[in-house]
Length: 123
Image (tube, rainbow, N blue to C red; front, side, top):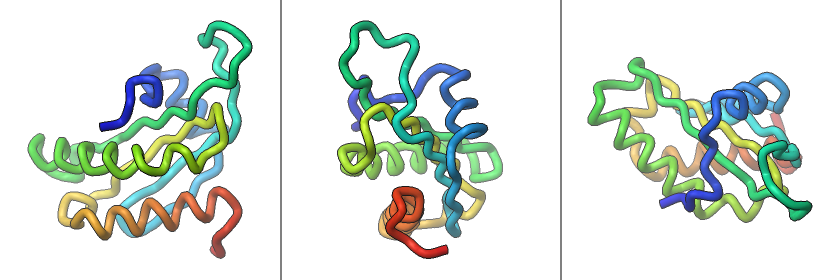
């Protein structure tokens, strides 16, 4: 499970990542990344943690399918949070095909999107 400190919860943080961040789309996912964004809500001067949020609409499937996709994405993101710059905001939006995708397909799409956003991948 993704630690509480690494979860994106505020609506305005989601909006910041989507509107001001970079985007990379794949077959089952679209990933929005706002690198090194400072958190105005964080106390102190330490670097804020990387935070991730997930958007899984009804187009993906029923409640059971949507929750399954969210659980898989949270699990995948937990292992990848350390690769991102501190203070980054990440929003992972599942596309309608994500409900039928298995864990490995979601992992490949997430890795490819993050690699592109971090400057290591081709278009």
